[in-house]
Amino acid sequence: MNLEEIKQCAPGEIKACKDAKALEAIRVKYLGRKGELTAALRTLKDLSQPKRRSVGQRANKLKNELELLLEGRLREFARESSQYKETIDITAPGKRVRLGHLHPLTKIGREAKQIFSSMGFAVMDGPEIETEYYNFDALNIPPNHPARDLWDTFWLRQNETKNQRPKTKNTERLLLRTHTSPVQIRYMETHEPPFQIIVPGRVFRYEATDASHEINFYQIEGLMVSKTVSLANFKYVVESFFKQLFNRAVNIRLRPSYFPFVEPGIEVDVSCTRCSGWGCSICKQTGWLEVMGAGMVHPHVFEAAHYNPRDWQGFAFGMGLDRIAMLKYNIPDIRLFYSGDLRFIRQF
Ligand SMILES: [Zn+2]
Image (cartoon, rainbow, N blue to C red; front, top):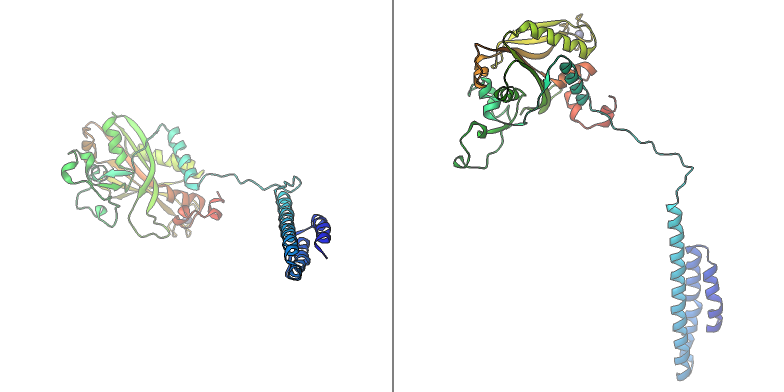
């Protein structure tokens, strides 16, 4: 083929190509090492000097033209295939949108709040970062109490020096609250009895985790203060609460116990929700489940809140929401709540 023939055939062939593979074949046919145009260029050396120049220029011009045409066609193919990808197939089946839903701890927390609200309890909130005073001192927990130990409490690092801190009880050593009880003091400091409150919230313990221990969990704290409130009132309140929460009749058992902020202190058991007292693996064959600690508010706690303990009396209780949720939903391991495992969460 001479240059004229190439100029006539090649553009039409490039245009007629259907895909990139055919296009490559055309490129090899004309511009490849053994291509027509390459061969034509090779014959230049046989021509006379002036002719060589003009033919050489024409051949190079043709080579550039063909390269541009090839490139253009290749771009067309790319555009066509990407257009194909962007097409929406309206007949394809849709993707199901999964709705989010509430975490079991959120559910049980809301249920508990709703039950206590129906009995006239107000719902209160407090800070998760507490001072040593509110978390321990004001609650009659002595300075040498093991709960203050480095291994039970998350103490926060203090950056300021002592002189920079204003000298009030609010700026003592800071910690992550180990229970929701500090809110009792905060509430009593600003309110006059009679009142009844619950305090749901997150608490922190510095301890090794296992099936029943986590470094953070949720508590509900309760406090009822008036001139006459007694443990009989308390027993009625918790019995009604568990009856509604577990949606079945339950028996309540009170056992003497010790907590620094109450006197007397009691441990509350409910009859096992699975075996109704006959004995099973959940209640370790005892028929009873430990669900909360409680007691009558210690006079020192009232004094810390500037109440006269001779004028007022009240009960306080605290329970782990995680434990209650584990009992209600039959969950074997507390760590599942915080695992973020959707296979677990989706069951609720
Ligand atoms: Zn049982």
